[in-house]
Length: 586
Ligand SMILES: Cc1cc2nc3c(=O)[nH]c(=O)nc-3n(C[C@H](O)[C@H](O)[C@H](O)COP(=O)(O)OP(=O)(O)OC[C@H]3O[C@@H](n4cnc5c(N)ncnc54)[C@H](O)[C@@H]3O)c2cc1C
Ligand SMILES: *[C@@H]1O[C@H](CO)[C@@H](O)[C@H](O)[C@H]1NC(C)=O
Ligand SMILES: *[C@@H]1O[C@H](CO)[C@@H](O)[C@H](O)[C@H]1NC(C)=O
Ligand SMILES: *[C@@H]1O[C@H](CO)[C@@H](O)[C@H](O)[C@H]1NC(C)=O
Ligand SMILES: *[C@@H]1O[C@H](CO)[C@@H](O)[C@H](O)[C@H]1NC(C)=O
Ligand SMILES: *[C@@H]1O[C@H](CO)[C@@H](O)[C@H](O)[C@H]1NC(C)=O
Image 1 (cartoon, rainbow, N blue to C red):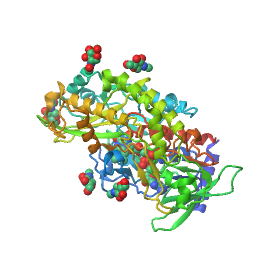
Image 2: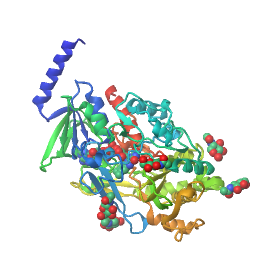
Image 3: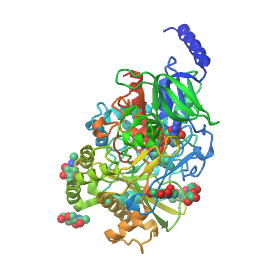
Image 4: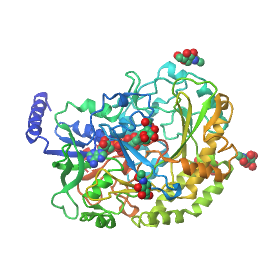
């Protein structure tokens, strides 16, 4: 196409968009979060495609709490964080958990810890094994590299323990990935590396190539030159914001509006949203509706639109449009616990050194025994979970998913946990979490109009295996801080303290401690899982909601099973790949 024609097309397009104001667009996206803005950027790169994003949060790209790369939960308890309460989990007694997510352009990527870890190759190949053709490590690896702009670390950083393998990174993408500015110059890195080597989790060069098993500095989504956080608004919206065919509309999506069915498929014609002045408005979608409103909120939008489990919809008095019992089920998080240590000498700088062990590393000589005892109980775990889900997903479908997860842990030997320390200035916050629990929860709409209040049932620690795994990982963490040379730096265990949890603490002592302390890691996936309907799926491999012609879901909610590490990198990979699928028009 010559320049004149393309210039004229732009002018015409700008007029059309202006004339229609915010009434109609080709694609309408719910949520300008981590995934939503990737999709918005990639679709609107074609000037003949018009895109609107409906988002309740604001532009926070200049907010100091967002920009800071010294993440110590700076934006917690502020207006850019959702804080969703949960229903208690039986194993936790009366303790309720709080679920957090970002409410802003950039969504949770604007408030998170910025750590970028993809996980194990086999965990992604399992997505294909579960029935999603084309979704595997190799495909996602290409998407990650496409999205990434890796910033090669300076000599000073490599001297503080940064290693990397350029083959695992992309250099021409939009998302800056680098290493923290102020890595500690103390002897922490060398000592931790030596201790983990003794414990069988020796150093690796780079954890983003599909085999993260080891000890290594984790990269982060930040721009080290400018010293600011790289969230999806900065990475994906900033370069697209002058496009006349892209618009962010402030509002909270309530439901999908339906046009005339195409055969047996439901056809969306837009979204209904609540404006800042509390008006119910409609925005039309000429082509497709895409939900990227998070794992907490997409199920609420679907249920509000008549897509879900008839049992749930009937109770809410919502007319059924598409019967899809998996909506809101199989919400999967990581189980996280923290212990704190005081130092003989305090030091400055960050220590983002991730340790990712396998089942063999954490269970040692007990591995085979635990593998077989948990396998023997897997049908029981599946039955129990199916009951917890009120039968929404049959036990045999859950069992199939569980067996794949069990194989990942014990046959494919993926990493099963992450141990991640933070220098608080006063000491060390030693966090550890397990990656693939078998206790899953769910999230549903509580009443027809309560679109801001997901009812979250965490259901964590419901299997003895999850407790065994967390106990073993906790013991490994405790052992590391008591093993030389890392132990040379440590003055004492402050919480819970060696009185409460001695180095030879019994299983009962650990159980009491863990049940009192375990938290949801805020790495929530799975509530609109990409799976066949029989397995409890909500979207197909083209990320389209089963039973619909033109409703897609793209964000953490479609991730069918957990990976090791954190969930932002998986979300970016999913969003890049989904954008290709959508542009492909299938
Ligand atoms: C405090 C915290 C720390 C974390 N730390 C890390 C970390 O260090 N590393 C890591 O990898 N992961 C981390 N995570 C997890 C990671 O950030 C998320 O998994 C990921 O960002 C989720 O992306 P998403 O696109 O699914 O949802 P989000 O990024 O949350 O986007 C959802 C968007 O939808 C909007 N929205 C909600 N409801 C509606 C509605 N009804 N209509 C329209 N829009 C709506 C929201 O305002 C938001 O902008 C952390 C998460 C939190 C909360
Ligand atoms: C947020 O508020 C809670 C409850 O008031 C408090 O316990 C917590 O310390 C606060 N967190 C931060 C980071 O300010
Ligand atoms: C905690 O959960 C219980 C139900 O399990 C609920 O009754 C209670 O209101 C919740 N508390 C809070 C503070 O959300
Ligand atoms: C670490 O950096 C601090 C601050 O720049 C400096 O005072 C200290 O001497 C350094 N320590 C080492 C071991 O290099
Ligand atoms: C595991 O078994 C081997 C061989 O029997 C033994 O030498 C080793 O001490 C055992 N390790 C642990 C942690 O029990
Ligand atoms: C996984 O670990 C077990 C026990 O250590 C070993 O026998 C098996 O060969 C390993 N499998 C793979 C795929 O590495």
